[in-house]
Length: 353
Ligand code: TLP
Image (tube, rainbow, N blue to C red; front, side, top):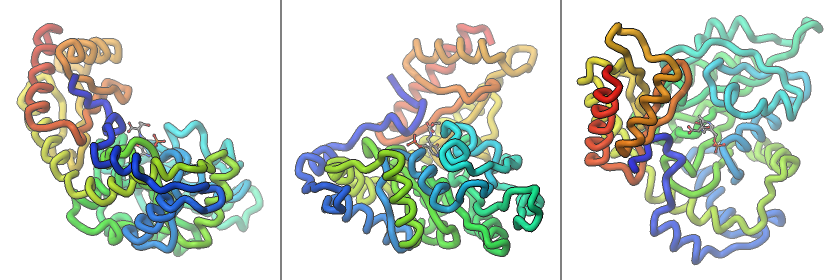
């Protein structure tokens, strides 16, 4: 089965398994796990920040960040298509009593600075919650893996800082962004106050994410992690795989991006497929299917289409509204892309589209 549902399905590499077997571990709640300490130091250095914290997941990392930046009754500005807003179980509003101010996400994953500005509140009016944090996402998942440039990121962080707000980046796939833009990741995150990135997506480690920022911020995030039950004892077993991920799996992401291009161009050859090839910047391909009347398939027909491609050996996911997502990753090569395109062709024929 060619599994393109997500890069979260990646399996640990043989080098990771070896490193996990050999990992030197200790009790991380005492701060005594050498593998975790090393991973945290590596992450902080790589992203150009003071400190880092190993967390169980991207969702936990974002939650810790929001809890560390915003207190009860302090508002957070997010995009309506952001992962933080849509897929994290309510996160900071539920856990920390921080309201979210939601503004539309632009098709490239950007937030319109004017709309951000209109939603900033300095708290001088006792009727409204003071906005203390702006969250941005890079790459942007629901926008199809689009990468925000340094200039776009800095436009938003400058605005936030001018209003004494902090800026957090949900950088679950920030290494994909840096590879696609061909810049060091530290340059891309230079102006944000905190970043969460995932080891368990395109970097192929089995579990874990890192939250990175100033020493003070990480101290507060550490407390939030504790409150969320995220103290993980001998989790150096997991961190060992994360170290291999950072050392060996970043540069190869360019292959995933090439395969996403292959897939996107192959899809564009089918008249029934609606795809904006120019939007494909990293390892995600978003498209929809049209029927003979040139209408997008209903959700039910989209699910049937996906069941058919699965019968023919290719798994993909639906994002709702007839949108289909295919994600390339470690373990998927150019031949797999050709096979996935063949499965899609057969599904289109069998559904008489
Ligand atoms: N994304 C998953 C699903 O939850 C949709 C995926 O398959 O893409 N931020 C972003 C931008 C993400 O895409 C994800 C996971 C997370 C945060 C959360 O990471 P985890 O799953 O580790 O909690």
